[in-house]
Image 1 (cartoon, rainbow, N blue to C red):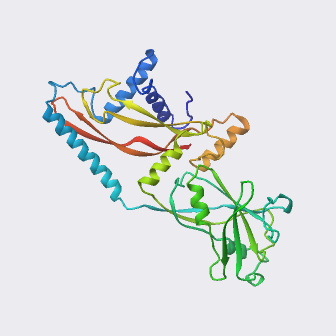
Image 2 (cartoon, one colour):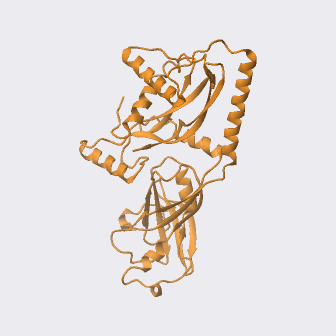
Image 3 (cartoon, rainbow, N blue to C red):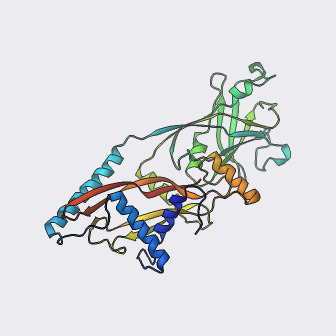
Length: 353
């Protein structure tokens, strides 16, 4: 089992929890070391509940107590879900800097119209702040403002309006996504559709092709970093379900992803005092973290690159990036019922840190 160089406690805890999930979620101890790790996981949960050990019931709860406890659990769960549903959709503002480069004529992909002018490559990398599958409210690239600020370039040199064609690159042939007319009054390019489609998928980077009519050249040599204003809004349950599916380890490519396994409280010997749930779907993160794959930060990107170059720097670790809560209801020693909300019990997203 790989040990992460960062957040070691979390990684080891996830590894120990994984040992609970043998043979379809049943607990079957195999050796003193494994038993010790399982015991450590149990003690961690008990510590969160403020207990020294599993409570010893003086007598078995009657049917009325059991039914009441189950009803209270359903009410607590319904309240939690209701609070999540009523929570206003959160919006987030991201300020990104995609890179624009004028491609040499010989490197332009085949499939562009014959009358197309020079092709410019626009590249954007996914960062930890970018959610998966959000609703994109705005994605505006302030390209002309930056170009007009360069020495020797003035607005008088432009022929307005300028028509910009946006292509998706990377396939067999460029795919035309949009064609926009940019005026002197509004010099920003909308990439809303292209960015939303990209964020809904698993690709770590977005690569677009831009052409201009008339040509806006000469663009300065090298690569220019342009400001992109991105405004996103959190989606509802249906979108959330699709996000979880995208996070699941379905491709089998060994890269950082999320696995789901069922944990039974009966299997670990707690069925006599845990009222509900009887089991839960535990998710954990695993897999490799190659350069620019689900990076949690610029530090993680640099760390992955250094690791690929020499191997002396440890690679980033696949760790949880977001959680959802779980309600745990259990009996106390006096036969009472207690409810505990675990905010960080169930993983919903993984990244490389």
